[in-house]
Image (cartoon, rainbow, N blue to C red; front, side):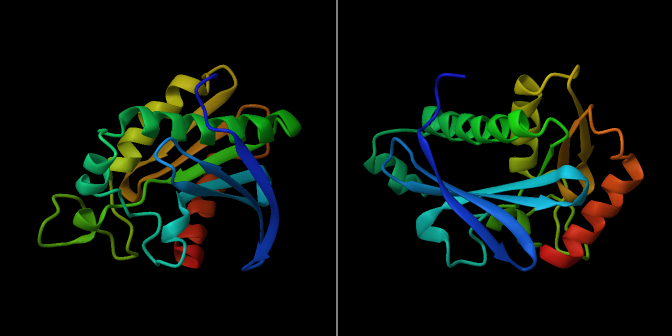
Amino acid sequence: MDNYFVYTHKGKNNLRSIVEDIYTFKCSLNVTYIVEVEYHPNDICIVKFYQKNHRHSNNRYSLLNSQGFLKRHNTRGVKNFLMILNTIIKINVEIYNINNNTSFGFMGAPTKKELNPKTTTKLINADGTVGLTKRFNTYSIYVKRYFSPEKFEHIEIPTSSSYLIKSRKNLELTTDKIEAFFENYITTYC
């Protein structure tokens, strides 16, 4: 994978009793991104990313660039967005190369519109998750291109927009453990 942004490992965090690796990179629109890779039992890594300028917002994973921002940069942002995703994949591959039991999970955060019961067509669950978000749909299509079914099992939980790219080498990680993990993760960390 050649089209990615150069990233820097900034160290580890140990907040909320979760060990995290923190990475940063700057995209072609001169915006810095922060990538958090959380390490959980059973070699599950949850990968999150957001713009640095959104770091203090409770909605940092849901925020999007405005159309005005994109117009000022004379772009639709598609190439930049793909390179951001490529960078996240590159970080995941680096972690996998260290431990090939590692499985990668993510939740497709809802946009503000998807969180609004008056404007959304999406299912908003009692726990605050939203089914089949735009990000979930986009990310799930994207990762299927880069994580081959020979090495990884793709487990989708569309009702909460959760996804796990499970390493086939991790024989201890069962479907029951994955479902229990996401149920606990949603109630504890979301």
